[in-house]
Image (tube, rainbow, N blue to C red; front, side):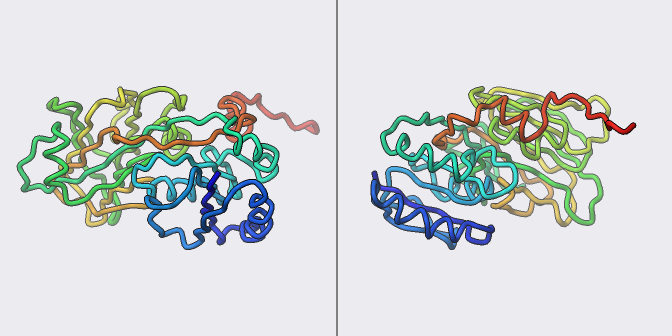
Length: 293
C-alpha cells in the first residue's frame, strides 16, 4: 500500500505522532509524502489512501483538496469531537493492519457543489452545464454550505428555490444547507436534525429566521437548490465547510447540487453512529442529578 500523510502540526501531539508513526508504518507500507502545510493540491498525490492527522477540519480541508479524486481518507482525531476523523491514535494503531489488508469498511459520503452566479447573468439554474460556464465562484463542501448575514449584522432576505420552483422568501441571519455528514456540525447547533450518513438527503436549516413557522427541511440530495440574495449586508458571505468562501452581493444566486464525486472515508469499526452521538454529543443522556442536593 502507498500511503500519503496530511498532518496538522498546529495541533498538540501531531508532530510527535508523525515522527513516531512514519517509521512504524513504513515496515508495512510505502509512505509517499507528508503534507504539513495543508495547502497542497492532493489531486496528483501518489497514494492508495491518505492518512489525516488532526481533526474534522483537517479532514474537510484534505477532502476539498482532492478535487474529486477517489482516494479514501482515514482520519485520526487530535481535536475535540472527531465525527469524520473517527479514529483515536490508539484505535488507529490497533486497526492499521486491517486497513493495509483492506478489511476496514469504506463509506461514500456525499458532497455539495456550491456555485455563485452573478445578478446580471442570464442562466438556466437547473442546468449544471450552463451554471458551470457562467459561475464566478465554485467550491465543494463535505459538511455544509452556509450563507451568513455578516456585518453590519442586520437581518438579510433570502429566497429559497428547489428544482426551478418559484420559491419562498424569508428574513433572518442566513441559512445552512447540510449533508448528512455535516448534520452533526453547525446544522445541529442551529436546531437542525441529525441525519444518518447513509441517507441520500440534504437539510435546509434557517439561522434565526424571523418566523416561528420556518422549520428545517430535509430533501433529496438530487434536488437543485437555489439561494437568491434579495437583501444582503456588506459582509454577507457564502462559506463552504467554513474554509472556502466568497462575499455574496445583492441579486446573486447560490446554486447547490450534489457533486458528481463523493468522498471516500475509511471508517473506524469501533465508532458506531449512535454510540458516537451518545459519547460525543450526549445524545439521549438522562438528566444528571447532584447527589448532594
